[in-house]
Length: 106
Image (cartoon, rainbow, N blue to C red; front, side, top):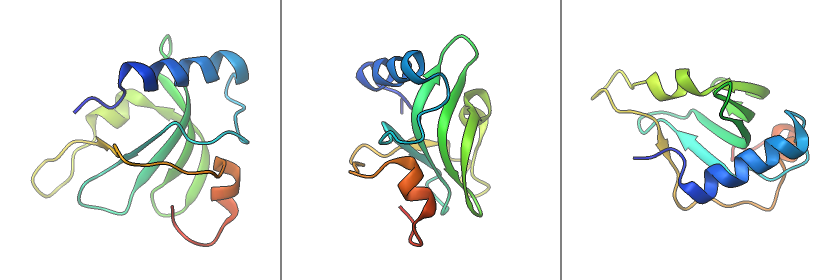
């Protein structure tokens, strides 16, 4: 599965050009996750030149910052060796900053 469709990639790059890794008050464009776990990544920006994204990562706790997309593409689950996937049905009205500070998981 492609992690970014063309429209998603275009929006992520547009956000990068507008905010330069400072889109705390933007809604996530895409949600990535591991199929066998609780981890997820909510991305708001993508810089294709450096292959870095900006967004919220939830692994054991929520954090906002830079995400190395080379690492994301290389991650596999221990069980069945499954790759990262894109949540095709994800949408939210909240910003990553609001999601960071709320108690429940996205």
